[in-house]
Length: 108
Image 1: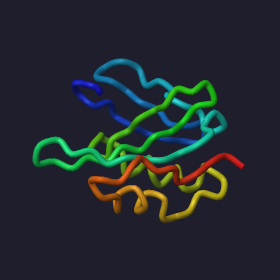
Image 2: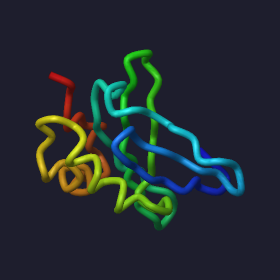
Image 3: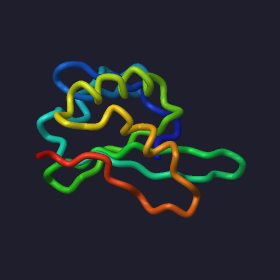
């Protein structure tokens, strides 16, 4: 996990991240995502939700709900991944502490 979370954004190409004053970089292109899902984590008195984007290589891009730009990024996800339910994020944030990670979308 990052010591200071990167700023997240999304556009027609994919999901971008920018750490500090470094240039923005493409974290994952939409056509590279093979599945999307999430998990719930508890850190002391905080509850964090993590959205996970699986790459065909087996790598996973994890983005936490408290990262800057998260909300705007999720709006773009709904439009960019074909067939993803509009309630995909709600499925993740409704998770209970004992629930295992879930997959909310797989590339057709």
